[in-house]
Every structure is written in C-alpha cells, then in structure tokens.
Image (cartoon, rainbow, N blue to C red; front, side, top):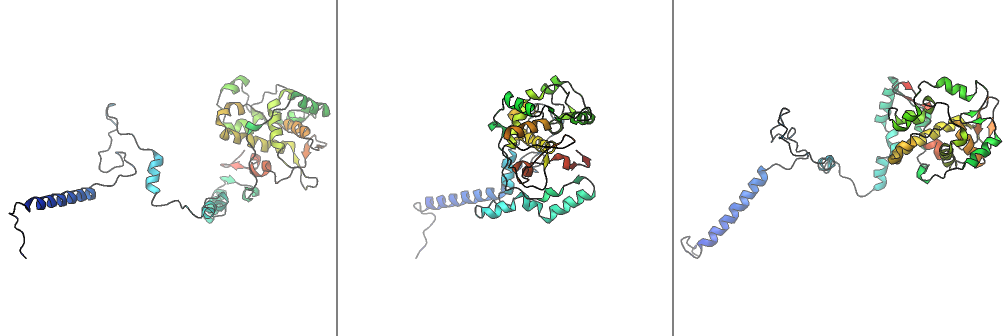
Length: 323
C-alpha cells in the first residue's frame, strides 16, 4: 500500500493542522512544567522569583497586598494535615484539653516550669471537671430589687459590702490593710490604665470605701445569678466561706469580658465583695453559718459549675509571683 505523498494538496492541510495541534500541546505542557506552582506566600521578601522590597523605596512604590493568612495556612496544610471527615470521636479526643494535660510532652514541660519556679499549679489543676457546663452569660441575669438587699440588711444588721462588721479590725480593716493603690473613681469609669484581671480580681486595690451595700444592686444580682445555679448539700465535709465564693465569682465575672466584649466597660465597673455573696445567699434562702470571727460559711457542693469550671486565683502563682 503506497503512502500518500506530502505534495498532494488534499493531504497537506490535514498534516499541517495535526502538527500545529501537537506543537501547541507540547508548548502548553512545557509552559506548565516551567511555571512554578502558586506559592502559599507571595510576598516579594519570601519569593525567590521576585526582587526583595527595598526599605528605602519611595512612598509611591506600594507592593501587592499580602494574601489572607488563613488562606495561606490552608494552602500550606491542606496536604500535610488533612482534616478527617470520619471518626469525629477520635478527632475530638485528639484535640481534647485533657488529652493534652495527660500527654507526656506537656507533663515534661510543666515539670520544667515547676523546677524553674515559674509556675505553681494546685492539685485541682489535674482534676477533669469538664462534664460540668459553664455558667450562663450575664445577659440572662435578672436584677434584684433594693427591697431584697434591705431584707438581708434587716436580718444581719452588721452586714456590710465587706462582710460582717467586727470593729476596726473587722473585714473592712483587713481590706484597708491590703489596699495599695488609690485612684479617682471618675477615672475608673473612663480609663483603661488597669488590666481587666487586676480590676476584677482585686477590686479592693481600687476601692475608695465610699458607697453603701444597699445600693449595690448589680453586684448583688451577679452573685445571685451565679449562686442560684449552685447546689447546696446537707452533709458536707468542708464549707466555703463568703470570701472564697467571692473569689470564684470574680473569675466568672472576668470570663464574661471575653464572652460579651461589647459590655467590657460596664463589667469592669462591677465590684464583688463577700457582702454581696451573703446578700445573694440570703435571697436564695441558704443556711448561713457565722463564726466567732465574723466569717460566713455555706454548704455548697464542690461539684457545681462555679467551683469546678472557674478558678480561685488566690491558689495560683503566675510567672513566679503570687497573685
């Protein structure tokens, strides 16, 4: 069988067309192989294919905006660590806080920090109480009435916002001895010079001693809102004092700043003292036990959310300094 001649005009266009398609395909493949894949980071200072940015460049020389960091991370880790779509239980266990606490590398890290006296963790740090839910937000709080506070003051005439008054050496005298800073009350309403944790966990440092418990409606309402979700026990080995419960309430209040940041300035002005805890306990009908020293104790279940999910910061030492 004879091959068709390339000089045949009927065959020449088809051959030329096929060769053009092959050349175009080969050219596209060569270009695809030569062109580098789009990197996750396209900034000139990190792209070897581009000239680094000159720090002394004119203001008119504006580089291309850096892509979103989230998109960069997805491009980097989409192949290295794909997120499994199955076995969600195993994934949740792998990402669990308590799985991290029980891991050996984390235990070694904590041992190193403890040996260097950079952190002191109480024994309760290793107790898993995550089954208890967090307390609801303050957005669902119901305000007490001044008559509720007045009822507690009538039942306990010696009650102040700092606890039971016991003369000059009573609770107020102790708090006065702890006070280290004095600031203008008006500045507290408008300034952010004090950290949130210091302002809420240690309000006695910024307290001027003015005002009355009968007008602390918001503080008493916060205490009643949190304590109303705590269970009391008739038989209990240890009781919690009003001052101790106040520490947990302050931690709860501090957590609300992160949950509702729009109300941060309002929550920063709430001062919680043992007297507010006593008013809330009386409002809830709790049994109040008063010692000879004027300390008030309550039988509260240690498994309640307030005591298991929020820390008592007086038990912690941060960066080697006791709080």
